[in-house]
Image (cartoon, rainbow, N blue to C red):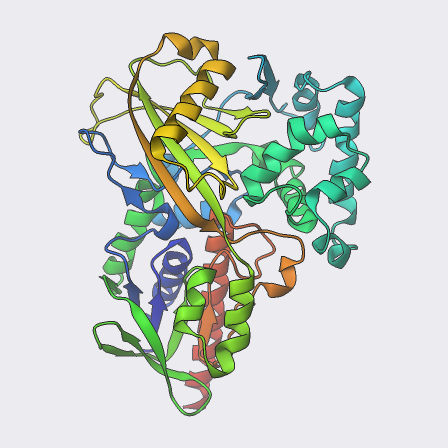
Length: 453
């Protein structure tokens, strides 16, 4: 039986490992942390509350690879659609609902655009120009779109300042986690084409009923172990041992353990590639990975004594925070501890990660009171600020050429991670897709090796 080592038990590593194990490969997963999940791992909330995801995450119906992954794990019932319109709320506390019709694409968006009445009629009608450009011209002008910013592209599509700030910019921040003046026009056009324009089902937001840990992290670990895979935590891989024939013979952990295998998948974030692979033939890859940079996200969890947000999620127009999610709180045993939680998300938050938590909570509370007057009678019980200085790669214009393919300088090593050349932003879908591709490449390599024996 062939053996494969997967370095990293994040989403990309788990999807890789499960695909390999399902194909009869002996799998060893090495994770440096004490828990699986990577950037969607579970954290303790304290105060007798149920654990939380490591930051607030949103999926879309177009996440086909992710939903197939969930289906293989048998946890599809743990995903819920966000019902009803998603409002954009302006600083004067006016609600502008963005809801989709049950009509074929692109007519499903007519109702949504009509609800954005904080924009003038002319601006709303022009929104379709950018949508059409994304749908019809993305592939033909791929290289040109990759080197300009999302703002410049939207200007080229005759989008006015109000349309950009009142609609497009919140979407750029939410999907690319990069300021609109830096963000890749190509990646944003991809988001529009594959998500919002593909159809109502594809554009529908999805949330886990509890946590992503319950949805696919813990089930994936259980499934791997059921298939005989070995999953080891607290195992920091620090080097790759050359086999002298253009490949890798083994990985070495910080404790000095040598783990040999026939094939390897490196499923770590781009900023960790350099520490593991920085010399010789890996130098070019490590340099490109470093050049991708990173972008921060802050998620602020606020617990109130009563519910006040009547939507599952809402977007701030012109606020320091960008999105807010409403969640009825549950205790670890499934009971109701009497709390009500909202999670506020600030994307591209590099300037805020240095601020103290007290100041961040105060700003969040101020924005809740300003944008949602119904929150003014609710009392804040507690808070938890989650800062992620390196949450995603920085999806800048021109980054396409720096994103690595699944292959590597070593013949029996493959790469996985949302930063690789998936054609998608740094998303859960991109991570799962990259893992599936890496697994397919490994199986092809192992099959060829078996044929030579």
